[in-house]
Image 1 (cartoon, rainbow, N blue to C red):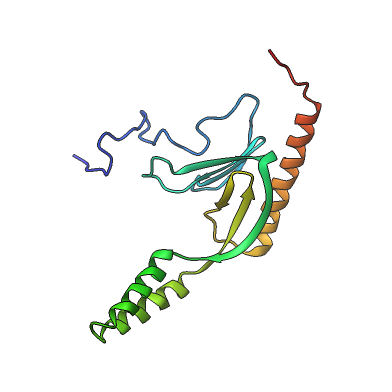
Image 2 (cartoon, rainbow, N blue to C red; image 1 turned 45 degrees about the vertical axis):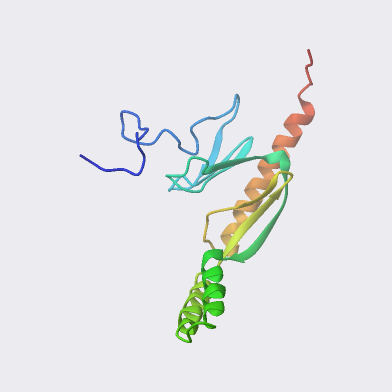
Length: 162
């Protein structure tokens, strides 16, 4: 018997999880590009990001017309910084906590990576990629082109009301 973190694992006959990035496409939507690990997918209508396999709300999708801007930032785990500050305050009780504070601060600084932050009307989404800036510009250009195609398609489509 295989133990899993989920109480009742949801899989299909091929033993793959139901919640894939490209699982539910809208009408007329086509997949343009997808990463090998299926964490990021670009379609004709949306940019879809999957954060973790075990999280119930681990998938976000942004409509291309809602994307405002892109930004490259260095990000890290805030948990490491919080533990560093906590251990720094604990130095009041025992001086040995200074070593732990320095350890967590170094861990915070060493795990910083350049990530792409996508700003939209609904908030900020951080893409789960660690790539060079040259290759990221190719992805950004592809998303901008898909975004322009989507906006032109929405402009030419007549609005039907009830």
